[in-house]
Amino acid sequence: MLKDFVKMETFLTVARERSFSKASAKLGISQPAVTQQIKYIENYLEAKIIDRKKNGIRLTAEGEELYKVVTQLEKSIHNLEKDVLKIIKKEMTFRLAASYTIGSYVIPGKCLNSISEGIGNDVTLNIDSSDKIVEGLKERKFDIGLIESPIFDDELIYREWFDDELVIFSNAPLPKTVNTEELYEFKWICREEGSHTRKLISEVFEELGVSCKSFDVLSEVSNTTAALQSVKRAKRDDGIPTVSVISKHAIAEEVARGELFESRIYGYTMKRKFYIVYSKENKNNVFIDNVVNYIISGKC
Image (cartoon, rainbow, N blue to C red; front, side):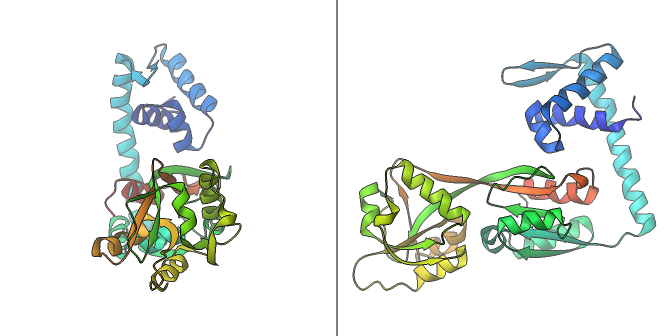
């Protein structure tokens, strides 16, 4: 049974994630498949290895012992894989793709250099829309994608990275919070029709009872950079702020320097998740694992 390391990998993932559902998402297989593999191990060992609890899972005494053994086996396999890669002198360029906000404002150049040093290979970064990155991953144009839109596909594995917050911003002073009625007093730079960010913002405003059709819209733009530059260039002489909605990461430095101003809707936080995405074919790829773990660790 130990020759079948796939089941052992499933056990390790469940133990580390402390959750069958999280293990399912990480491995890119269904939750029933995870449960079935754990049951197979328990039947083989004739011992219960995992207890399910309301707040997660707990390893039994037998499970703890198995975890120690399989961890050593995993380490040996990884070391063997590294030795094999050294022997064949595998040379490759790691192809990273990121959506506009992430690629331009979240992942700095020094992070790419760190990843390159960590895996011993060159890293290239392609910045594009989330939907095109998903298609590129399926066509094997990229190794990993960092996206801000939940465009899910059964051929890919999605790892939650962290929560992003969208804020209202302007080149003129704004109050720390605004109520929904004050939104109609601004001039707006909006995202173009059909974009995921436009859809998300519209859903938020609709939930709050705000009609975007009643806004004074100056223009519509296609991406974060265009929204940022449009607001920066907006006139300030009439006393009416020109605003848009953007990731707080995109304006963090300008806000800190007092060049831009951010505001939030009173009593409401606009959040979205960033995801790390890669093909299910690469779920056991050592290069993919190294980069994913490096990014998730927050070292960038």
